[in-house]
Amino acid sequence: MEGKVTTHVLDTALGKPAHGLGVELYRLQPAGSFELIANAWTNADGRLDEPLVSGARLEAGFYELRFRVGDYFERIASPVPTIWNVVPIAFHVRDAAQHYHIPLLIAPGAYSTYRGS
Image (cartoon, rainbow, N blue to C red):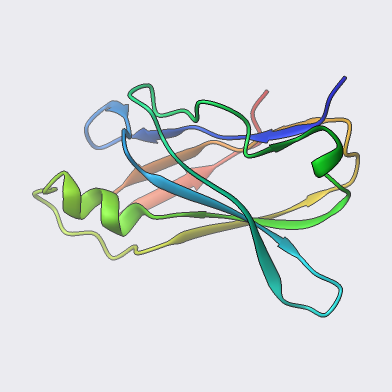
């Protein structure tokens, strides 16, 4: 099995996928700084067209997904202003052969995540 990192984003306030939301994936480097390793935009289904990282490029270590929710809510002209700008989700890849699917559920006043399949 090839390891990979994937995500999808659902707008729970509108009850639909969050289309056009920017997603960045960072890897923690030995010196303690984060390095950007991938970025993408969600499609009409709220998913990415391909994994953010997969195969040999996925290594064990600490990662952080950053979701650009503030830009998304501004672009869709949400009637309720959001306090969120970027939602960071830090996670640990222990086994680089696994699939790490990390969805995000968003609303102007809340967000949640879980490990998907």
